[in-house]
Length: 387
Image (cartoon, rainbow, N blue to C red; front, side, top):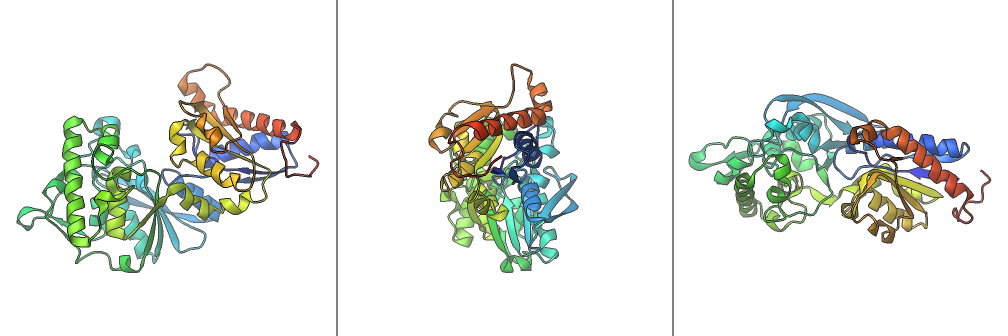
């Protein structure tokens, strides 16, 4: 029996790596002789570096970078096993984790630290990049990242604008004379798991601004500022980021990576799946287990369990998805190719208790799933092995 285990993280409880290990532990209890391959996954957001570094036997580089409000923070990026590809998560230096809720201010928050990581990788000679969007505390359209790479954002009177999204409302032009010379020789793939536009009611400011600390007035201010950034990018670079699907990801970083890095926005799951070798692993699998903290209608918008199910379906492999909870609309995942959906919490309990026992609950449920598939007649259609 060949089992592929490909979960995302269970936020607040387990990283994707820890989740895969717990599921594998349960599977081995049920089938000690099974061949089990752990492929921790991500969809481009937090956890992408860990998943990709582990899958490719890569390394990490750690440095002091600029935090969302200018304070120094410790952050890292990954170098894949090929030795030439860097993986940078926006959340690493520019994410929520660096700010307590009371300090969040998307009008001032900057992605400069993400630019610090990219610049460091460029200076190490790396020229291929995967940029993961998601988890940012920012709303600056990637202007801070670009500033760290030598771009200049000029306002009235030729003065350079301060960092932060709100200041972009006064943007008049973008100086490119001092941008990092290695950018011209580098290739950027951008792992993006949403399709929100840069501006408007479905844009970065309106949809994600409130969770970053923006009230209604700040949302209007930031939306206007990003629109101005989009207009200047269109005028100077000939790129219409205002109509680009995904431009609103990570506070407009979708637009910024496209404009300032020449990045190609791709579904985040597909970028990670390719780098991890998921498709090859699925080709001869008998059972696939995936999962994340919550399964609901949003899972169908490119999240890991949906992506795993779609790829496994091409090989006729059954897929079971495990989650901390099954939310509204999770039933639609059956139509998307998931064979079974299971919540791992054994009974009513407080959230902190569920989070604390996530590993044990996940292992127990994975064991039950594998035992079921071992003994259900015809469940494992493709295996002829005796377990």
